[in-house]
Length: 262
Ligand SMILES: [Ca+2]
Image: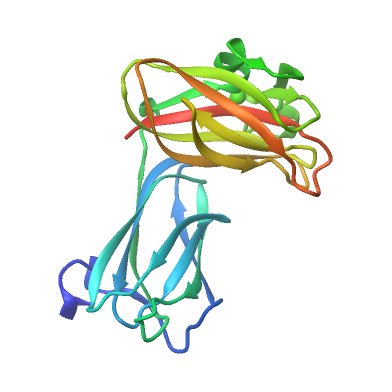
């Protein structure tokens, strides 16, 4: 790609071309030594014959990209904070369409860049600890539940377990920060066949929806984007809104909420 400028790392790209069309998939794998939270972005090519694609990381969607531009150019797509596991992590591209002005469905990948976030910059609010201590619920009961029987991935080996058995209920709690600012927010949750669907609100603003249904007991991290937090206590509400049609109950399991200052 050196004929198009100096942005391309190594002067070359991975060019996915020759008959690409909607629905086609391409898998690439990136290797990291240590599991944890990374700041990550991707460099791609845009041009008049480049298509649109979705990108998933280990099965979770992290971007929707339109590769169209009137001339050949370089674009950096920022994913913010992502979780990578030690070893290989799968990135899957799926071509979803093209801009009305685009002439084909090409994809050009220059590189991924991932930088590990320092553990000391991450604040965890344990569901079974800080969050439980000042939690109230509209109905049902709350308790700390040991999760070590299901694996080693739960932080402190425990979660906040809310058993209510019906939708349209709310768990209210708070998280405290020392400094006003913008933070990246994510949560670690339990998923299982008897877990419901929640909405998460911070200071009254909805930041995301999470479906806790899964065929077996597992742990899942959900990214809620950027939130503005004020010095002192910030309200957190978990609204239980329903359940997957296959789910057998409305349980909620919170391992932790996690913030990193942006
Ligand atoms: Ca925990």
